[in-house]
View 1 (cartoon, rainbow, N blue to C red):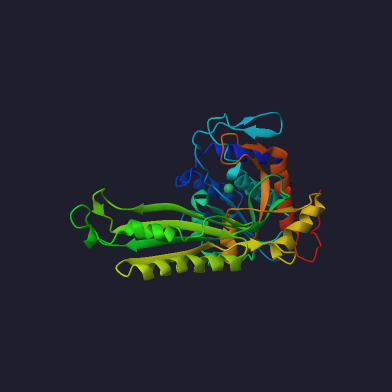
View 2: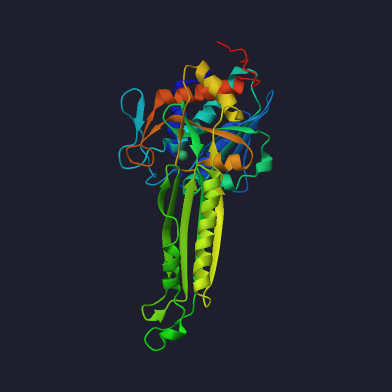
Length: 372
Ligand SMILES: [Zn+2]
């Protein structure tokens, strides 16, 4: 059975181990130790993500969370604010994003193990570097998982808060190679990369383009000194859209902008690289993750509230691997701020939902027998 006190103490233990992105070794070792103490197979993969598993009956389910936190996230001193809320002391984040997700997975593992009830085969992936661009998830080995369905425990709010839609996210780099020359002596011998890049920038999509599409030119790098015609300039941009066709159109628009400017400046060399960072998704009723989780949420009295999200999560990367993922709330609020707090009963509810999903042995709607 899910044990609130044990879950809270696991959460407090994990928060006490600093793990800003890039410095996750100590918490990763502790996670592996805890899974192994429960008798689960557990190790770190080549990138340092924590992988754990336990055999069971029926279709496997992947549980995922991330172990890194944002800054300021060192020396976190959590404290209760009333019986049900945990906050930091105000000088750091709390780290419920996503130590609460890690604690929920450990609590579910402990509960399934001690109850000895039938459950699905469980696979676990707790990633590093989520906060700095889903880096750990990108380094997961997709062949290491049999599960085709995943529950990602990394949303704010109660477990009914589901990330129902996430954008297709593209990034691009445009490089302009010109020719250097002394700006005062013989500028006509130069090919000014910055001026040419400026022509490209004014042709690039920027801002909110429609309700579900945004674009940005975020960074420009170029030139060396004031008195030289610059021979190099790089433009870094991105765009996101819920609509994959719109995203494809924007890829073409970026390439088209470069083609146009290239035609005007035959002496310059322009290169463009547009990349899909992760695929988006829109949850539908026939999605395997929806079919796994929504009936369980309703059975436990929560009405699923799918909401669109502007950013990506490890769930997007897992979807790119062909694993239908749903991201659910684990009780956190004001994430990435020093005001971050955790609502304990919502974290407990999240653990109850995840456990119930694992004890549902088939997707026909028949729940496994419950022990008291
Ligand atoms: Zn997170």
